[in-house]
Image 1 (cartoon, rainbow, N blue to C red):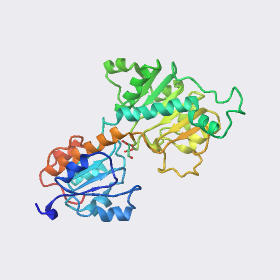
Image 2: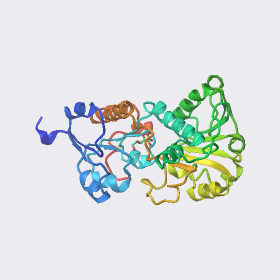
Image 3: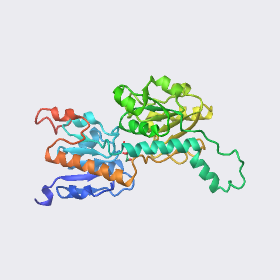
Length: 339
Ligand code: 8YV
């Protein structure tokens, strides 16, 4: 096949793993070298005439779909969260969009656990203390923390990642409460030793609250001033989902008021969070730069799944992890036109 007839794929970041080489056998693959995302005008220029896109949190909306043009056959989001993708707009045009569920659940649960333990035992603060030479001069009672073992853990959003967090809590002999729209199967609840409770009860009873719900209009600012007023005094908040679920002004006020002990965040609003943001530089807040899925093995698995989704789209087959299966129910010939 002449190079020009081959499908053209844009990969919006230098994603790891070898799966892109497989994609190169069936398509022309251009990788934006990064490390930062392409500026929006550049991205709109780059997507033109593409058959497939691999996006890494890049906004996929009507504007971008228009810029890509009628040849676009599939979009792969590198991540389980897809709040950056206007899935309804893709479906209206008959363009399947896929995400990367399952392959990152354990890895993301581990970052939540790392944050929980770090906040409870003041690990990042303790290291700063040592680096500042304060070990030799500090007092015996410095850096006292709280126990995780035996404490009550509140999991908000008990999907795949929330469940992996709960599994790891078994070893810490925690009382696990959870809340989400739908209750889990009772057998799974028993396996995870997790109890379904209303959201206000979860807040009132949990020593640690960890958020694993998707970013939707309903979950926006889920942790607002009212929610912080309901939390158990001295609780620790962990967020590894999306920054928009936490009202950061309300969080700062709750910390200042001593209502909650600490917060540990892998996600913020906006991202990247400016280094002079009020959340940065406080001893009672840990902020890390959205590294929940960032292990070599997991990121390679995410690339593999994105490539499998794109391969399927190019072959006219069903994406293994399509977000909206309804895109395949549309009458033949309904795709391609502007939505
Ligand atoms: C990021 C994530 O996509 O899976 C998700 O929803 O937020 C992450 O895995 C990834 O870190 C790239 O930014």
